[in-house]
Image 1 (cartoon, rainbow, N blue to C red):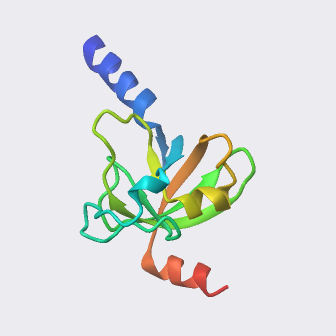
Image 2: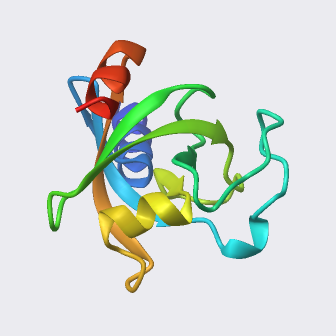
Image 3: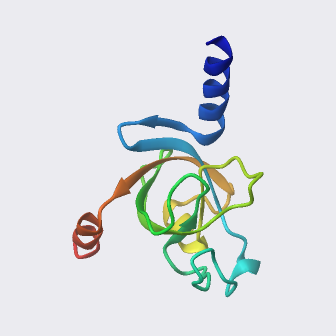
Length: 126
């Protein structure tokens, strides 16, 4: 039992803390050199798109990402995977990182919440 608790604690410390469909962890953003390369879904990566890579969220998932330092939010679609050794929660497109205002620092602590297509369409039209 003790080993199970230790393994669980280590997993949560690397992947973020989950509370009611939300996860808190570290975000980074794609380097511009990946612009135009194929993602895991077969789409071409666009630094100006609103997309992200994650190893813990299913491809095609829409998520609302909130910068916990300044409260800025974006909605992105998971369309790629990160390097297996990457311990960050999410890797955002340059445009998404710019809107969250962490280009200068390179990383930030974020809250990630899954959203439905209906929520996405409603937020986009407001």
